[in-house]
Amino acid sequence: MNTSLKLLKKAVEDNRLAHLLILYGSGAKERIKTVLELAAMLNCTGDIKPCKICSACNKIALGSHPDFHYLQPSKLSIGIEQVLSLQEKIYRKIYEGKYRVCLIDEANKLTLPAANALLKIAEEPPENTLIILSCSNIEAIIPTLQSRAQSVYLPSPTLTEWEEEAEAFSLSGGDPDLARKIQKFGLDKMKDLIDGYLEMVQTGDFLQTFSLFTSLEKEDCLVFLQTLAVTVREMIKKGNLSPNFLPEIGETMELLQKQVNSRLALEMLALKHINYGGSGNWLK
Ligand SMILES: [Zn+2]
Image (cartoon, rainbow, N blue to C red):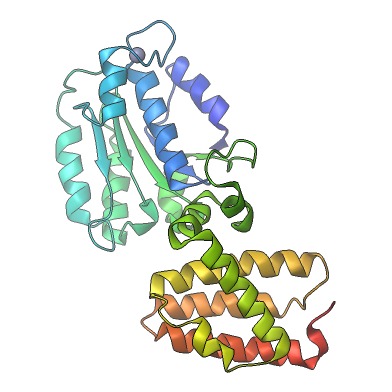
């Protein structure tokens, strides 16, 4: 079941909420903000919820409310022991709030046993408890869990709604997470890298790759590839570039996730792109 945020807030007001929610889309920060707002709405003692001044609203904003639980991957995944420890807490009596809210952040990193343990909880949901799985892409959640949950898509902010660096947001194609990564890496540095790469492909001067990619960590390489994919997609849309360019970028990103040498993978990509560019596929 997919519902909008507006309908979700209405469900909160009417007190008819599912026990398990999947909140996906937009950026990680935007999703956390939404969850905190929901948790405050559910526990607020003011008239207009969330009032942002009552004790419950304040504690949730500060992350100190005893009925708000936050779970995130320890190391690379969310393991079953983390879900079991949450399970132990949520069948106890609620401390001081009206509603217990558990946020499972980066829920795409739930291991299969952890996801199955969550399924068990969803089958016998504890009273007045809302478990929210947060992730950017709902496809990363196993289908059995999806079918048990109410899913809510959170749209990305528009450029006018975006309150951080606008140019990084444009360069990210409107992806809040990528925009923040670009900002962290350095907007000008990223622009230079993209321009340098495209120029190198166009001129076919492969030797330039060596200077382009020196001192890039694997994480930086991934941010570069994500940004390159957005740029290339735009160029293809405008008819300035052959569609061949895009799939190779995705494949290189997959390679990087596996433990390959990231610089070597980028050089291989450059070679392939030069081949496409050099054979007249670089359309003006
Ligand atoms: Zn309040």
